[in-house]
Image 1 (cartoon, rainbow, N blue to C red):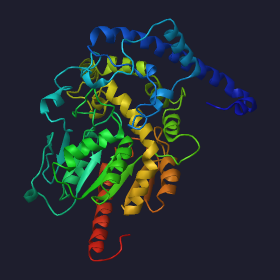
Image 2 (cartoon, rainbow, N blue to C red):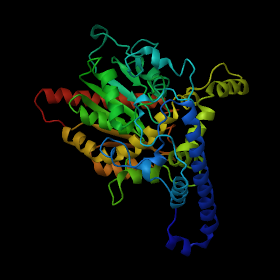
Image 3 (cartoon, rainbow, N blue to C red):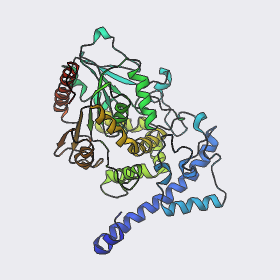
Amino acid sequence: MPGLADLLSRPAKWPRVALTAAVFTFLDVLDVLLCLVYAVLDAFLEESPVACYCHRTHGAEEDSGVSDTLYVRRSAFRDALLALIRTVGVRRRTTNASPDKARSPRWSDCGCARCLVWRSSGGGRLHFVVGKEEPTPTKGAGAATTGSERGPEDDAIFIHGFTSSSSFWAQTVFPELAAAANRRLLAVDLLGFGDSPKPANCAYTLRDHVEAIERSLIDPLGLTSFHLVSHSMGCTVAIALAARNPARVKSITLVAPPYFLPCEEKASQVALSRLAERKLWPPLVFGTAVMSWYEHIGRTVCFVICKNHRVWEWLIRILTRKRGVDFVVRDLTRHTHHSAWNTMHNVICGGAGVQDRNLEVLAAAGVPVRVVHGDGDQVVPVECSSRHLKSKLPRAELRLLGGRDHRTVVFGREKEFAEELRVFWSGCENREAVVMDGCVRA
């Protein structure tokens, strides 16, 4: 929100600022009331209810990858309401309880067969889609291709963004790449999304996501050399994965990466305030702010939409007169509130605190980096790439696309995007061949 000096110099802003303050104050009150409602319902419906972050303190989890934004995203008015509630003795049955025995799914999550498919796959491994030269991609959790079926080129791991799935890549770029690529294309469903496991006893930290990819893809498939392609939040995961495996990563492509240069404010707080700014307009920004700042309102939205996704999908099919539902719409419901809420804060916000260290590892290892961003992106500001990331990695290849937003930076230009990947990968592999001949890596 604007500072006091700015407001005094521009009186025309006063009504808008007053309306914004009123709306978010109302949401503060509503979220506190919903906190009480869920406290009662969880106590009756769950054997081991886990306290929400309204009643936890940051300290014991400080070094475990849990973001401080889960605890300090509150307003003074909200804190006063919570203090009043605690004063009169209204509290949850458990506080700071371990989620080890938490029921998954929770009563407010969907329990249909599709949403629980991960429980029958066993092993807790992530689901991923494999695209090869064959025109039809092979799906499966733990699906693999033997060495004799593969060509000489390096594999490529594709990582989706927030509230998305492997379909983001498998149904857009894979068909364009598979026809000419003599390599495995691996699109993974991140932990808590798509058809991958959604455990309730997980904090969904950046480390959790990276280790899940290593445990599900890199180690079982014996990937010793691969490219990384990522979008939005997936860029944070990809950078951390590459920093843990710099010798294996041949290149990394970052599409709309949420990165901000260090400043006096804590990195996690910068990420939250910039990516989920408390504004009423545009609607996309307002919706992001509501889902990022208000734990219980977000849980209610997930309860109404995600738990009842089959009803909404049926209505969409009726209204559109189509047999299926677009994968973009379907992916919006393929998570639990617990997985989405914790991933938002612990990866997007908490992960911001380790971005610089991870990028320094990539720079030191000489991993080729390519950055793609649309100048019409309302979710992740284009300066994240054009100014912040480019300043951190001056040798990174940067491509800014005019008139493209957070999704159309890929959607609608799949063929062009695939061709750009081929050229970039080929250049990286050629440089690697030169290095093996004794030359210094560029």
